[in-house]
Length: 105
Length: 412
Ligand SMILES: Cc1cc2nc3c(=O)[nH]c(=O)nc-3n(C[C@H](O)[C@H](O)[C@H](O)COP(=O)(O)OP(=O)(O)OC[C@H]3O[C@@H](n4cnc5c(N)ncnc54)[C@H](O)[C@@H]3O)c2cc1C
Image 1 (spheres, each protein chain N blue to C red):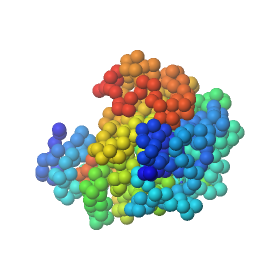
Image 2 (image 1 turned 45 degrees about the vertical axis):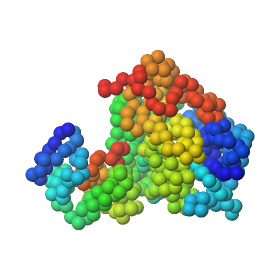
Image 3 (image 1 turned 30 degrees about the vertical axis):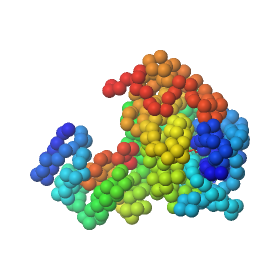
Image 4 (image 1 turned 90 degrees about the vertical axis):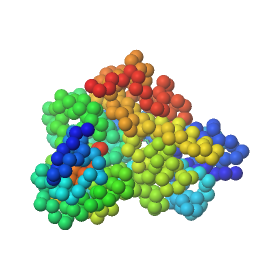
């Protein structure tokens, strides 16, 4: 399995650079991935999305859909697109140290 | 007498009634199936109606023809399930008590979920082909088509039969060519996915096919609203796509009775164990077909594989034995590609569609992930198989519930 050094720590990643162990994630890693994706600086609104993604994935065993982020996470889809342009779910899950959603929207 | 109640007499519910009446002791168990409609539609046939290949009479039969003797059939709406009381409340006010419940209420389109979809332009410039009414209205619209911008649109995943919008696009291209208006028509396929299909191997083959047919694929398009005045789809990131004719697959959701029962997720699909098909919330409630929240495809062929596992698990549950984690997400479907040809794909939770032969390894006759005329004949034969074997709970010739990897090429 490939590894990468992000924010000064070595973590396991897949070929596309997604962390494979959410337990290795830290906020500093999230910041660094966001910077690499051209997102940020990370604001409270960005972190609200990331925190919801991590919490919901831990509880449900799968990454939430955009609809679930809206309904359960209370984050309007328009805002999600404004915060993470061009594929918000692909980008936000990467920043959150989660797997890329299967049928990625 | 103990009561087993099946909600929904569509593909999955009807199959379960046929399986269980043969397996359960009729002196101990009373079986009841409830559905509000009297007509059983062969939904895969809706795809062919807009092009005049099938007519309404080709895709409908009375539900009673498929419900076996020994099963009580109630034609009534379901209001809600009171799972804590083991009761179903019907719309006429009656209550049905159950010992075991099977939810098979399916999925349906909800155009209302997208701003601007329903309204004056619905079935004038904006059509669906997921309902009999939509498919028939679209046929009339296509008859008079002289050219312009045709947009085929997938709103949100999951949908039943995830290949249907692509098939529709390819069939439309072939139809317009036959009608002599292909050159006057721009065709776009617009999807929230990054590729032409949810399964990567397939997406590559199908994506090439779109190129060959000069169909523009617009990926990553998450529709926020439709402006039906200026005839545009508008995405959350403010891209716009113009259409003269919009054929959309609206958001699919479970029946509202699931929401009223408090048993569904955001899309009214019931959280279900992916291997045993038991509902996550109640041990005497099982779920099958499009009503589940499972990541397997929502397709009749999948419901057929699930029915074998669920029949076994209902018997085990009654006997107090551990349930069989037997469902592997197996799906196989024909993909119509127009010009008299089709593809066939076979996959499960873990394994992506591959090349090879089906159902008999190596020999076939059907070729996986290859466009052939025989696959097209297979798709047409599926209608006969559906009415005569599938619904009645008979095995499909040569096809097993668990996926076989023999004769398939992987790793290419
Ligand atoms: C255009 C199209 C093409 C398709 N092509 C294919 C294909 O090629 N191959 C394939 O395998 N599958 C295909 N499918 C999918 C297939 O038709 C479905 O997956 C299958 O019918 C699901 O069966 P089901 O029993 O879960 O739901 P359904 O067959 O839809 O049955 C649900 C039943 O529940 C009843 N019901 C729901 N709510 C209530 C209520 N509140 N009160 C009373 N009754 C209720 C409904 O009346 C209905 O009869 C296609 C579907 C469409 C729309």
